[in-house]
Image (spheres, rainbow, N blue to C red):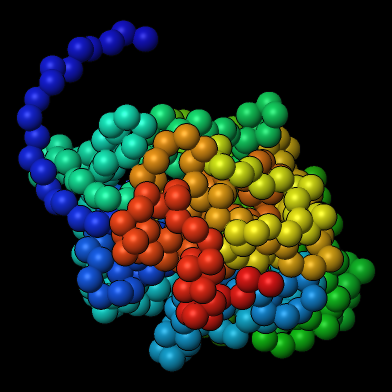
Length: 454
Ligand SMILES: Cc1cc2nc3c(=O)[nH]c(=O)nc-3n(C[C@H](O)[C@H](O)[C@H](O)COP(=O)(O)OP(=O)(O)OC[C@H]3O[C@@H](n4cnc5c(N)ncnc54)[C@H](O)[C@@H]3O)c2cc1C
């Protein structure tokens, strides 16, 4: 590749704060709120998009509040967020599900409003339209970040930086070792979510309940579709029929999620294999392809799935959602074996129980490995192995490919974010590096805010 030598230049310091949180998705929102919880820690939340919420805004239900045994395994700040939404009629109950453990439907637009409200209440300063492009590192310690915006290139200094970018952007730029995907680098493919309105949902329910042999639902009993919210995963026969008639459906299963309105369904069925979101030209190809696929999937639903004959595309998510990209190498790397053996840790910050759900990097299918009960995630998964002054929360925490296929759901990311923000706050209070924070006060603070740690 041709290169250009960019001359060094002096840039303005935009802010000097206690904690800077990068990325306002499920992990980042909880991290910022928890860091600011004592009322005097100065917290700045930086977000590249025009709204807060990350993947909470793309039409997905939150999975994993309930564990494999049906009991609630995540509370704390994540539950408080749901309670706020529920008070506005913008979130459902946690509905038990044989395949997804639980689903909690949320209203994406209300998430955006509520996120602002929460940050204001917590005293977190929010700056949107700000891309974090680099890290300021001295002697292997992160001192802040470099931001790019319409205001130009600026520096932000912080005593602790929390990377909640999903792609471990700050960690990567700080020199933290990162990995992508399986042993061949294959990553779970992304999906552009979209909603359809005008769906005759009673007709869809009726078909599944009355003809389960035709309208198959992987693992889920037909009774699950009688009332309340649902996610369909199945209708493989319909996809095969559509493919036989020339429709190029990118997935093997029909994944439909009931929305907040009576005739609304969110569709999780586009899939662009080979996408690397850390390469913008590749991600651009993904966006273009996903939009083409969306039209084919909508046609499939209208022609082959009961209830969709008069349905039309209503909303399209603001970006194609990324399931997997970089993860960091932390002080501990969580593995599938840890999850399946339910390994006990002395520094547990969160319970999780969602299956190991791997959308294959190639082809159109997915493998799910179910768990018997909830497992633990240690604080060390948030702490980079070498670099100091930095925590990494959310889907880019320290997990291998298989483990992150379970930990990636949003309830877990929120709980990890809360743990990171709480740790940053406590470390500042004690005037110690966050990586040296002893576990007992962290545990005590998380439990005090309602966390379930086993
Ligand atoms: C198609 C799809 C379906 C899924 N289905 C479900 C589901 O049904 N239920 C469920 O619970 N989970 C689901 N997941 C998983 C879940 O959505 C993600 O794993 C989770 O949202 C990750 O949370 P996060 O906070 O780590 O990252 P994100 O939600 O990705 O948030 C990251 C935030 O950081 C910002 N950002 C990134 N880089 C920068 C930067 N350099 N500078 C400034 N800001 C930056 C982004 O704009 C974004 O707001 C799905 C994921 C996908 C893609």
